[in-house]
Image (cartoon, rainbow, N blue to C red; front, side):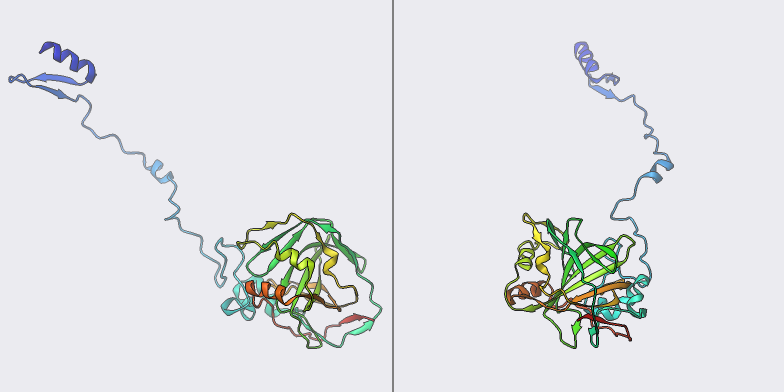
Length: 294
């Protein structure tokens, strides 16, 4: 028995062994019966709340914002459509209060000897993004236009269906808007009207690289000849207007190419599957001066 007590004591370390009269060995734990001290209150308070219980900051009253709490949600129909843009957020108020909004029905332009637009477009790498409102194409830096003594760098171009601008009441199947920005922040948009006809190689190159997921850009392996998107006749209409999407910023120089460019019915149908309609309605010209090339 004494040998067994010694072996058990060696294995149990600090535990004590007691032997009853019946020869039964009991193990007695000498550790304190007092529970371990509670963690300090400050330590508990410092523990971060779980993501599931964290309270998000309240949204700005009247603004319906995206899932990340950023740009207010807007679109082309329903509660987020053009008629409601100005009420979605304070920064969109110009969409209703502005006096030089776009697009417009271009009528009664004054025919003059307009300064030619100098297009400094070359072959460029590009990426295609479905941003949830249109198909947008981003290109390398360095492409620009020069007009009225100012150079505007090309930022991106995107598509609308149908064309937002009209010419003497005529509406076109689609339009491409090439958005440019000058060093001083001024904006200039070149609008290329697209009508149904023969297939368009540059549009097809964009469609070939359409992303499978919205918001996920596809970097194309080939380059894009940007000048191929322009018509042969570089005559244009020009007026001062705004962005045609929120926040509808005014002071935008518009140049609408007079000659439409063709794309096929199949190419139009591809875009229509993504965006059957993504055009802001025509706005009041409000007596603005419109000039056009002779």
